[in-house]
Amino acid sequence: MSFFNDFAREAIGTGIVLILLVLLRVITTKLVRRYARLSQTIERRTNLVIKYLHLLINILLIVALIIIWGVDAKDIIIAVSSIATVVGVAMVAQWSILSNITSGIILFFSYPFKIGDTIHIHDKDFPVIAEIEDISAFYISMINKEGELVIYPNNLLLQKGVSIINTDFEPTDFTD
Figure (cartoon, rainbow, N blue to C red):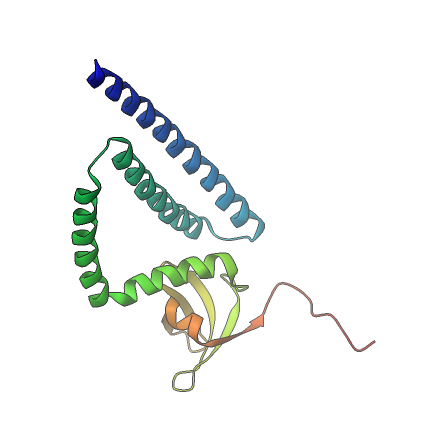
């Protein structure tokens, strides 16, 4: 009878976790879409951020399911350390990918420029003045005045000073 009680407890816990999964995904999607609408962010960037947040939620809920189903802690530690080793080696080899994705999310939530703005990237070796055409997870695409397509990695964009040359608002005269 103990087997059936344990199974019922685990099944109910799994049901609750699955309901939480659906609720968290719906809530995060609505919050990100509301933020994107208020900040006038394009749909493709919004969908990318939502996809990353859903991945994070899925990982956390998989961990919760592992705990509910009573997997031995020693087995979890061995599996996690093995996975972390493989992922660590892969990330050292490809650190710029993770850096660019993280930078893309930061740009989505906090930077004041948007597609259509002309920006000046203050880079000593390669200064760029161009109009933003697209902002993706890994890079920003711009067209300079010579008509060249300039692709600039997001992580470098966060490391450099950026001036917005034109915006949609009128500057205020503070000389009064």
